[in-house]
Image 1 (tube, rainbow, N blue to C red):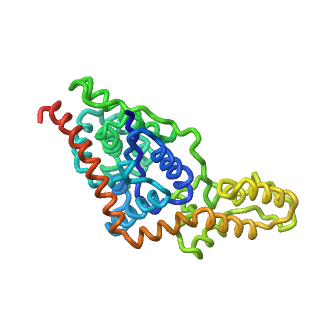
Image 2 (spheres, rainbow, N blue to C red):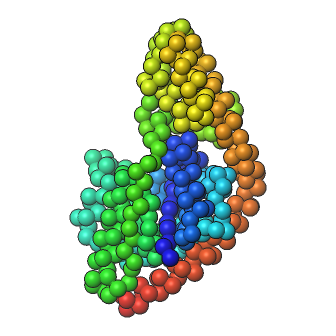
Image 3 (cartoon, rainbow, N blue to C red):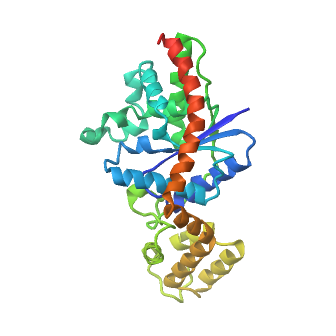
Length: 322
């Protein structure tokens, strides 16, 4: 049976782009798949950026609550918090001793920041080894990744092969499940939605704040009665991935006739978001008001994950002579 592994960083409450592009597809895959699924909150990776313990803790719980609010079944899947698995950091050290320094310098996570080394910590530099350990510690053989994440899986395959060649068959070499259909969700400025760009829409924000985020979406300078090209409008692009086909067609026709202004279009988008995600928002707020329940579910998942992690680590320790 294949083992599927997916992780998501806890750098903040997942935004609309995370939800439509990653969380909904991953939850659907995990809940419908007959394969064994491991889904974890990568809160140790987040420490390379976040140094505030309260923020890191809150982000971890809000990320977990988002997955649960979108229907992840914690019984069917092994759902856990990365920091609850100490075996993964021990494995990351072993892997680091089998991987060339020069190869790590080529990793995107480091290379993208090489021109500003004062902001690069050692954790960021060795980031790919911890990511490799995340995958190899559970004998995962299928990892869903976007094309921009493919390098990390290639590094995982590389270090696993190096170890196997030197120490004997130890690791399963994972395969990539390329997500070609991953939705590209634009932010309020028309660029890809990203926390680092400050252009996100937080569907779990209070109503007034959510509306304020939507109202700042950049639009062209056209009057209400001027015909508008929906393909060039950031509001319509977001509406297109949120609303029903019928409502999208209606708004499309109104755009071309010059029968709608951008203010009204933003109101329509706001209402569609509230309608589509009403149950998810309700569940999220319920979970965040009952954080003990989220903690318990993560701890139960970690107990299951550690059984597998301990077995794999025992195999690795034996190979290296410990």
